[in-house]
Each structure stands twice: as structure tokens, then as C-alpha cells.
Image 1 (cartoon, rainbow, N blue to C red):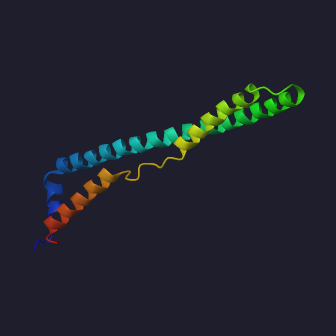
Image 2: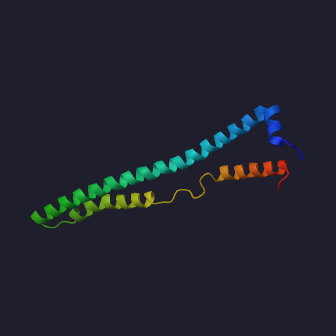
Image 3: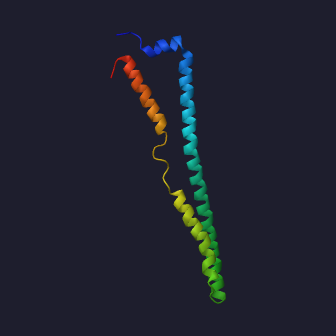
Length: 125
């Protein structure tokens, strides 16, 4: 059994290999974080659209109620406020979608593979 783990001999003799490996990890983290970041941005925009449309619905419903009280009933007083309400409902549905459940799954798999390789090199199964 060796006193020094084989990874240390590689670190000393071939540091460029380790740096390439670390750079690969960095690019993998950046790629997966940008994917998750895009999903978070989409959800934030959906929440904003939902809030604005809900506010527009409340304003238009209030105006329609006041006009309906003063004037005679017309279907436009019901249909106009329903448009932003429908958009708010669609945006709410988009905003409530789950984030990808396996975020950083590829990074975890790579870390597990590297840990298994190091255990094998060290003589531990």
C-alpha cells in the first residue's frame, strides 16, 4: 500500500491535467446554472405578468361595475375584464410550474464518477 494517494503524484507531475479537469467542472457548473437561471427568469416574468393582469382585472371590473350601475347592462362590461383575468390565469399556471427536478444532475453524476475513480485508485471499493 502506498503512503501517498496516486492523485497527489498526478498533482505534482502533471498539474495541467488537474487544471483542465477543474476547468471542465467550471464550464459544467456554468452551463447547468444558466439553464436553471433561465427557468427562474421565466417564472419571475410570469409572476409579474400575473400580478399586473390581476390588477388590471380589478380596475376594469370596478369600472365595469360602476358603468353597469349607471348605464344599462352590456356584455362588453363582462367580457373586457375577463381578458386580463384569463391572461393572469395563464401566467399563474406558468409561474406555478416546478423547476427542473434534476437541476445539476449531470454535475452530480460527474462528481460521483470522479469519487468512484479516486476510491478505485486508492484501493478502496
